[in-house]
Each structure stands twice: as structure tokens, then as C-alpha cells.
Length: 251
Ligand code: NAP
Image 1 (cartoon, rainbow, N blue to C red):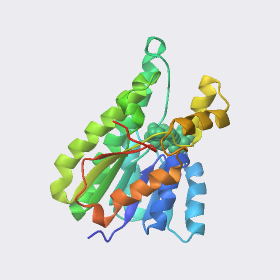
Image 2: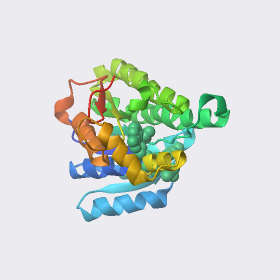
Image 3: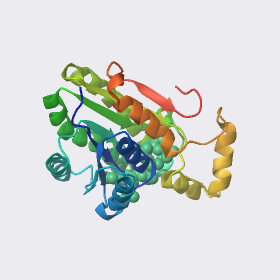
Image 4: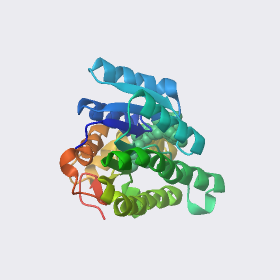
């Protein structure tokens, strides 16, 4: 039984991560809101506290080994040993392959894959010790291939293999690992995509909604709901899975 109920959500200063942090706080978790900019995390912490929850703002770059170790130590000292980790921090550096720089390739893989690896390696020590844990990784429908995203789609497909191996290695310690692969979710990330291709955001969203079986775009709360399920006590027999949350079938 999980009685510590401490969660870490990376990339939680805005977008999907902020929605997930607020949902886990409403579910009863004390939440470490981790992002590059600690001041930006404090706004999410204030919203959680105003709703009666408990949270801590943690500034850290998930791709920096020393910063990750210090951040997880700080969470354990100030909130308690983490039993849930949501690897959500992410960036896009889109371009067609022939125009993509090595820097755009390296930085995307560093945040998504190296970041998830470093965070998970640090957090699992607490979970395996407690004999209970939940790791939830953000993949994407782009894992199936997406023009202009050779770096991002490789990283998001990598998240799926990473998740399945975590499930194999950590299951005997009471730790599950699952991935969520969102379709189009309204955040600053998708707003940046619309800007890059030169389409007004409202028009971009309408076009996506028309192509989506449920007839709408996704919101951070849609992803937060799936995270809440994977983090729950009752989901202990679900591990190594990839859940597409995309308003219709994928894969
Ligand atoms: P977002 O609005 O851009 O938020 C991402 C957050 O991650 C930002 O606050 C960003 O901080 C933070 N971050 C970036 N690099 C970081 C690092 N090295 N260390 C710590 N934090 C870092 O993105 P989102 O749309 O909410 O996406 C969240 C996750 O869902 C990402 O993994 C994304 O790939 C995935 N996803 C999103 C969609 C979608 O449609 N939105 C679809 C599929 C998957 P800064 O603001 O300081 O850069």
C-alpha cells in the first residue's frame, strides 16, 4: 500500500505538466512541481495550495545529472520519499531531416530521453526501498512518425522502449511503469507549432478537431486523468503499457 503519496512531475510549470501536478494534488499527493525556472513553478504551487493541496517548487534541468540528484534529494528531504514520478518535461526543435542541426537532434534527445533516464534512476531508489512506485512517461502520437520531427519522434518512440524495460526491471519491487502518448493537446508547445507553420492557432485547432474522431482537440486535463489512473493503487497490475490519449485509435 502506498502511504507516502509524494509525486514529482517534471516540466510542470505550464501545459500538460501543470495540469498533471494539479490533478495529483487533488488526488491527495504532495507534489514536487519541477521545471527549469523555479519562479514559474511557484505559480502552480500557489494554485495547488489555494485549492488546499501541498506542493513544492523545484528548479532543475532534467538533463543535468547533478541537478537531478540534488532535486530528488531535496524533494525527499522537504516533502518525503517520492513514490510517483511523471516524466513530462519536453521540448520541440522541429525541422525536416536535411535541415536539422546536430544541436536540434541532441537537445531534444537530451531533455526527453536522458532527462527521463536521470530522473527515473534517482527516483527509483526511493520507490524500490518502499516496495511501491509508479513511473509514468510522456510519449506522443509522433512516436509513430511525424514529418519535421525526426528528433522528437525518435525520442518519443524511445520513451516507449524505456517504459517497457522499466516495467521488466522494477515490477518485482512493486513499481509499475507506463507511458501515455497524447495526440494534439492545447498548450504553448502546440501554439509554437502553429506559429512555425504560419497558421493562426484557432484555425489550426479547428482543423485538428475536424480530423479527430471525437471531434475536439485534447486538453491537459485529458492527460492528467490518464496519469491519475496509472498512479492509482488499483492500477498495480497494469505495467509496460502505452496508452494513446488522442481522441481516436492510433498505432
Ligand atoms: P510545454 O507547454 O512546452 O511545457 C513543457 C515544460 O517542460 C515547460 O515548462 C518547459 O520549461 C519544461 N522543460 C523543458 N526543458 C526542460 C528541462 N530540461 N528540464 C526541466 N523542464 C524542462 O509542453 P506540453 O505541451 O505541456 O508537453 C508536455 C509533454 O507532453 C512533453 O513531453 C511533450 O513532448 C508531450 N506531448 C505534448 C503534446 C501536445 O500536443 N502538447 C502531444 C504529445 C506529447 P521552459 O518553459 O522553461 O522551456
